[in-house]
Structure formats: C-alpha cells, structure tokens
Length: 124
Image (cartoon, rainbow, N blue to C red; front, side, top):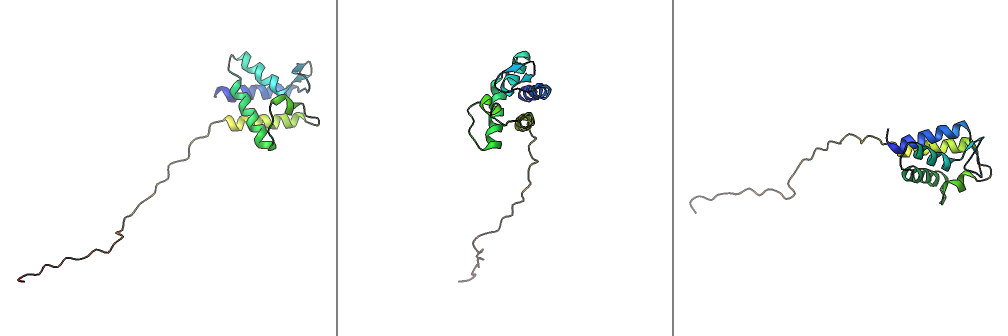
C-alpha cells in the first residue's frame, strides 16, 4: 500500500470511530484534518500528500474551492457519513490504477499517386 493510501485509510478508521466539529479532537472523536495529521505523525509519514489528495477530493465532489479541510469539516450540517464518503473518494484518487493494455493498430500503406508504368521503346 502506498503511504498516502495508508494514511487516508487509517485516518478514515479514526473518523469512523468518532467524529467531531469545531475542534481537532475530543473524547468523542477527531475531525478529518486532525485524523490525517495524527496518523501520518504516528506512522512517521509525510502528511502533505494525503492532505492535498483530500483537498482535491473535496474540490472535485463539491465543485467548490475549499482552502482547507477544517473549513469543510466544520460546515454546519456536515455529517460523519459525508466525511467518511470524502475519505473514500480521496482513497480512490490516491490508489494507483494499472495502465490499460496497449492497443494494437495495424497500419497499411497504399500509394497516394497512381503508379505510372514505364514502357521501353525498342528500335526507335
């Protein structure tokens, strides 16, 4: 598993156990941003790429430019289910997909200009 997918998957599991708004963490749970940073720090991995992937998922799904994860997480009316779904989208974006098989294209060549037959005149 690549490090970005690992961080996002483990952070999602933290949010699934308990999610909060307006704070990074409490006895009730963690917010999305805190979960990503806490998991990355615990695993001694960089958190920048998981954060960028999560932001990309947010922007693609909402068609809105969110400057940061806490602003989206703390939006009034936001639900834990929406946060978990966003983690799923971010994990999907971070997961490498195999390249499609190469396509075989057969090329045939035909002359563009008509072929002119040469005639040899004998005895001229």
